[in-house]
Length: 142
Image 1 (cartoon, helix red, strand yellow):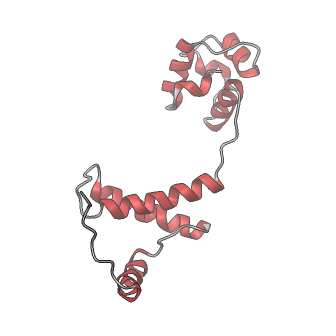
Image 2 (cartoon, one colour; image 1 turned 90 degrees about the horizontal axis):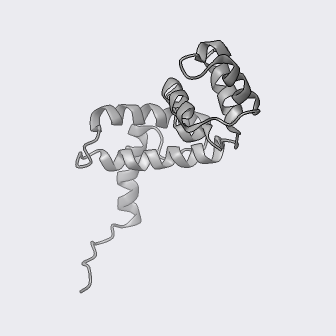
Image 3 (cartoon, one colour; image 1 turned 135 degrees about the vertical axis):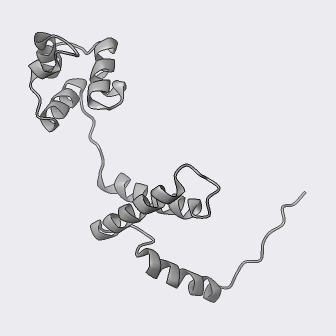
């Protein structure tokens, strides 16, 4: 059984629909930082409106723009591989924390050894660190 195909509109008809859409949204593809900023702002508005409702009339616009943003991020913001100790040091630095500030996760001496790479981070401590920094626990595991 063959699926019925819809009539394909002319290129001119597509252009007549696309041009005002692009003018309204402000960005339909993301190639520059300015495009990225505009797309992210538009995504935020769409997310506030659409939420989790995949049947919402704007859900496909949200998906399209999110795909454009993701492609740009994948190209521009590649995350280098890092050891668990490097991840821990980075997060501590970003949050302005010292080893003793993580006493709720592990003793200071153990944090020191893990941050320097002298000691592996156990699954239990990885879970605590993940909860503390609101990240995935596997970032702390080799």
